[in-house]
Image 1 (cartoon, one colour):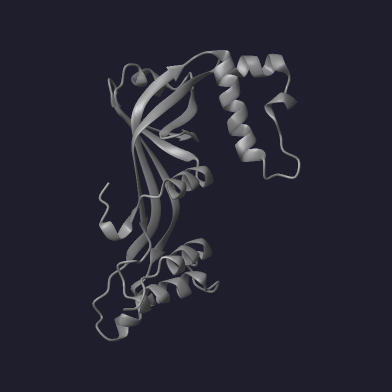
Image 2: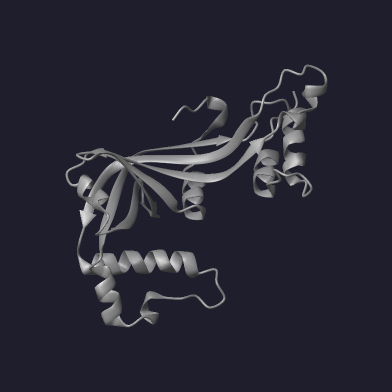
Length: 214
């Protein structure tokens, strides 16, 4: 991923927070079957300096077979994103030297995948993932709410994945390369509910990362 220094995000807490908020990662491999990509919800686990991504694939999805003995895979997590119109830049009225672009936050993680088939591991992973997604609900659903024999049959239909991350990189492209005036114009437009491309989440990020006036 091309990351100009202006857009680089290296804070581990920020990277993990994006993964937690946008856990549906794109698992990409170049294995025996060629290039493959599968959208998979991941959990991010940290133990000291060690970072691990855990997930599962349907056993019927042949993608898991390409992970056998694979030395590298890539997982992409896409965070908040929005189109940026040139009309939002105050500089348009003076120079007209502006073009459309796209603001986005993204994390890419590379690592070594490992497959797991043990029912206990799969049950823990499914339970942890469910708890992570349900905890904000008033009445969270838990795996234990379903019959044990039903859950056991479901676990037989999946394959676990554990990825030891060897490199993780973040890119927050949020108008930091524009002047404070232009970045402010982007933030205001994205926060405007009458704007067709309004995106208050991205507006807040742009405002928080706005370059300071000299």
